[in-house]
Length: 76
Image 1 (cartoon, helix red, strand yellow):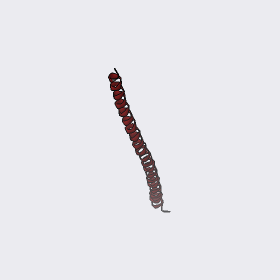
Image 2 (cartoon, helix red, strand yellow):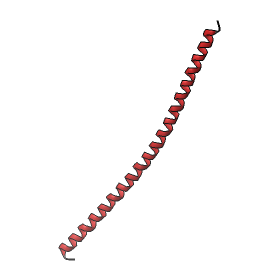
Image 3 (tube, helix red, strand yellow):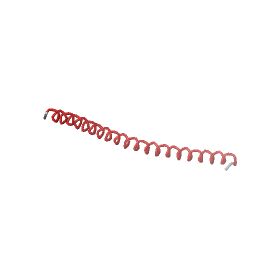
Image 4 (cartoon, helix red, strand yellow):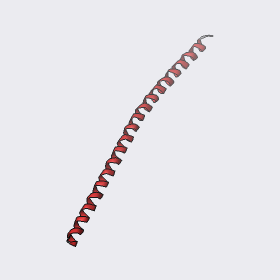
């Protein structure tokens, strides 16, 4: 009468192994996703800084060109 008990123990052992495998896989996937998120965050910050610098540069160029245009029109 120990055979059914041993069979149940074997089934539980297999189920536990599957759960541990899945847990390990999920942890690895979470770590990979964290790395991707950090890289994306860093890229987004760099892109925003670059866009801000480009906008400031374009604005400065517009001010310079407008001043030059009005100085020519006024003859200064």
